[in-house]
Image (cartoon, rainbow, N blue to C red; front, top):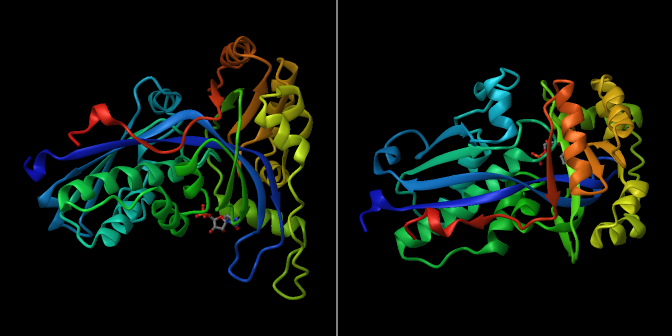
Length: 337
Ligand code: C5P
């Protein structure tokens, strides 16, 4: 096979946090977390191919992004509520950084072209950028292992590399339901035997994660001096159990996001949406991660569809999905590997 024909594709899920407990920041600025991640069935796809022309340009990795056909994100682009130009195509793109980190670990960069098919809204609190990075790590590892005739780095090593790219990246590789501690990258899988039905409502404007953490600092009077270093509250075992068995009313009772208040302070209009979703039949609603995407929990697949229809009648972007789902995975039928 000529190098130019070689390519590999991988997908990675979006996430929400069923619990997100925040502690006082450590000196590096990161906040210790106790979080319960759930991977949801909205997937980013990254296709990586060898392109020797790219090796002679810039860092040796180039990226293009298209909205994934049929996704809510594609509708948002079409209706002008999201712009592809919001996504950086230079070396600040997390997928490009992932490809560079993997090529460094393999000891060679023959020139890598990435194509991202994007389904997850940008800067929304669903971890779309982290999913791009996770899918790129898996795709580029498979591509370079084949091209260089080396063993793959494998999941464990990719999760370690991922943690240097962003706190959520290791979870996007792991997937499923997982407790996260530290920055969110110290993970423990929770075995599950049923699914939850979720409805996501992306917003027209994004919220930058650092700004939401700064707002949390402000509300908790965190100053550089006299830092008390409060630890995050431990995860609630009742919530973890409920999520593990797909007990939606139990999850609705115990779901908690400490970043919700700061996100609402920055975007007060989200409060009315949270109440409205519950009026339309959701068991609970919360801000996803650092927001501003709002997530609702529904009793069943039918209830989730009803909620989506109700929200869409009011001209909101809304889509239903399920979780937990698997983490980053190669897509065998797409590749030549
Ligand atoms: O790790 P990631 O790049 O996604 O984090 C983005 C920003 O969010 C960090 O630079 C930091 O300001 C903030 N953050 C934090 N504590 C965490 C995770 C993220 O303060 N545990």
